[in-house]
Amino acid sequence: MDQVATALQASDFAAVASILDEAELCSPSPSVLEDGWPAALHLLAHMYNGSLPDARLLYKRLPDGVKADPQVAAAWRLLQFAWQGSGEGVWHALRSHPWSGPAQALTEALAERLRGRQLDLVAAAYSHITPARLAALCGCSEEDAVAYALGRGWRHAADDSGALEVVASPPARGQLGSLAALEQLSVYMMQLE
Image (cartoon, rainbow, N blue to C red; front, side):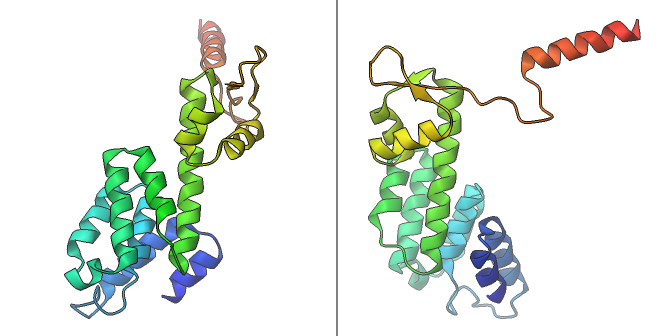
């Protein structure tokens, strides 16, 4: 468990699930999941990594006494909403439980990761979006949603509608947009002839 504490202190949340998986598999105790196992943290770590099937299988392995723990039950509800693709349910489950200890840090990181994914999806799907809709998708207040949008380089729409204009991020260095890639391929093919 020292490795888990080290990973959490270093904000290496992606490593927590694999550390706990390995510890579970290497444990000589047949009742490893009963002996003070950080089940909620383990479930949340799998969700943080996006491996929902692994989290479901872990929950099925947990003894009933462990499943009764309020934090484990809250992590299970969160997993159910994530599995069903219910964004509102996920945000509600994250906010409605008073997470404590290492699970609190992991749920905060999970919320930021989910919010980042939502913002990426909005950037790919929308040209304009209202702050209220963005706030609902990102599980935050409208003011925070506007701040996240402006932080990504989006801007207020010029038509005074109150909407936000989604500005696509430029391709990362070394990556090309589809038109630039096509042009580069055309130049390369011309050089071959």
